[in-house]
Image (cartoon, rainbow, N blue to C red; front, side, top):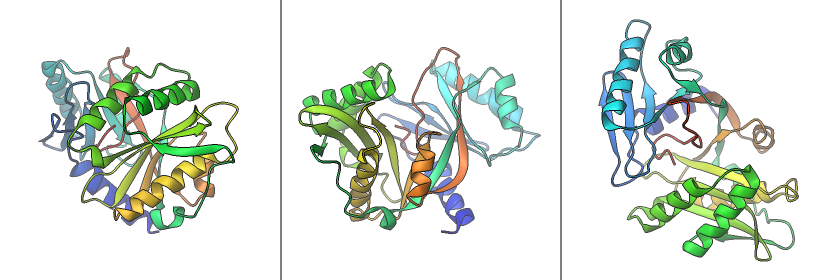
Length: 272
C-alpha cells in the first residue's frame, strides 16, 4: 500500500468531497471548510479544512457562528496531518474541547476476507428489525459501559431510511445472548468502507469475535466493490488491527464545541 497516495484518496473522497449521511442532512462548503449539517438527531461537524495560519482563526469563528445560528452542537474532526500545525491549539482557544485521539487505519479489503469463523457457540447475525436493534444496543452498552440510546435512535432511523443498503449492522450472539456488535458504512462511489462500533462484552474478549466481525464485514464490502476498509482505532484495537495488516495513516481527534456534549467519534462522509 502506498500510504501517502491512500491518505490523499481518503482525504479527497471521504472528507473534501463528502456526502450527507442521510436524506435530511446536507453538506456545506465555505472557503476552505467542508461541514456536515445533520438531520434530525444526526451528526453535525467539520469534516475537512484546507487552511493556513492566516485564515484559520477566521474560519473557526465562521463555523462557530454558523452552527450557533442553526442551534447545533458540533464537532471539528481534526486529523494529525491537517494544517496549520497548531490548528488544535487554535480550536481549544476558541472554546472547543478535544476528545480521545484515535488512529486512522486502513487495510486492503482483499486481505481481510479469509474464512474466519466466530468461536464455537457464537453466531453473527444481521440487524434488520427492532428486536435486532435491541440486541445490538444491549451488547454495545455492556461492552462500552454507557447508555446506548443514541445507538438505538441511529439504528432505527437508518433501517427505516431509503439508503438502508449503505449501512450494515451486526450482532454476535452466544445462544440468544448478545456478546458483541459492529457496524459498517458503505458510501456509494468511493473506495473506502467504514468499520464502526466494534465492541465485545467483557468475558468474551480475546476469543476471536472482533476478528470474525471484521472478516464478515470485509466479505460484504468486497462483494460491493470496496477496495479499502477504514477504522478510527482506539488504543485497544490498534494493535489488533496492525496484526491484521491495517496501516496507521494519521490520527483523528474530535474537537467538540460544547463541553457537555458526549458523542461517539464518527467517520467522514457518513459520520455515523
